[in-house]
Image 1 (cartoon, rainbow, N blue to C red):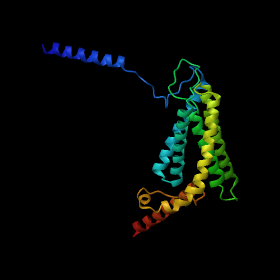
Image 2 (image 1 turned 45 degrees about the vertical axis):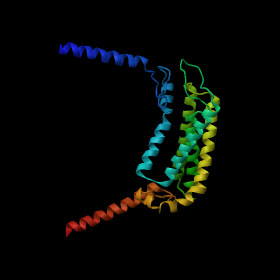
Image 3 (image 1 turned 90 degrees about the horizontal axis):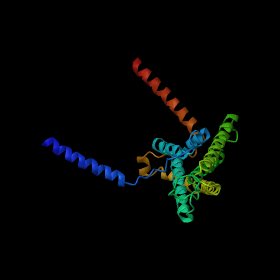
Image 4 (image 1 turned 135 degrees about the horizontal axis):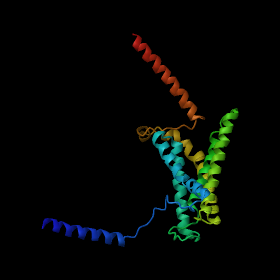
Amino acid sequence: MASSGDDIIDDIKSQFIDNNLINTKWKPLSLTLVEYPEGDMIGMFLALISLMPFAIIAGFITLILFRRDLHTIFYFMGIVVNEIVGLSLKYTIKEARPIRRDVVYVEYGMPSAHSQFMWFFAAYTTLFVCIRMHRNNNSTVSERFWKWTIVGGCVGVAIAVTYSRIYLQYHTISQVFCGMLVGATMGILWFTLTHLVFTPFFPIIVTWKISEYFMLRDTTLIPNVLWFEYTNIRTETRKRSRKLVSMKSQ
């Protein structure tokens, strides 16, 4: 009797679950879902490239958590503002995505968020490298090479991501061009605002108690942060090593 009762309860549960699954409307997370033509290696490559904005965001979050530089934080704030502007334009213009596949898009396509994001990043980084990092007129050939490599890489990736949205039929040419224009304009405006308005307040911000608690730092006056940290860590390591040796010898 007990087993038959359990079987009845199991049948009721299974029917209830099956009915719920049947009646539930499933929706894919389009944030990271990218489709490409089966067997198309170029399409697969461009699909991977189109995920670059998420890699950049992950990089920013990592830098903010572990380096806590004010300029990086304000750079990321600009990215957030750029995304808000893009969403506002999408729901103001309300232009549908291209209908070229058996897919019903529920999101608007004007402007392309991927294109806007990448061109904001490319414009801001280009200005940062050419203006903020151009403090020493006697920079070596190696330093100039790496500066222009960074600029070329950012612009190249931005072009690739922009093209991927057309190739994979997620956006029209006008939509990615609009995203490119809005993103580049926002990047230039936000860099100008950060460089001329926000940066002069960084020395004041780092003296706040909350800034000291979160260990926020201002590296504006340091032209090469990597070299500065490398030389200081090396010097401190050698000093501590000599001190440790002297303590052991006593």
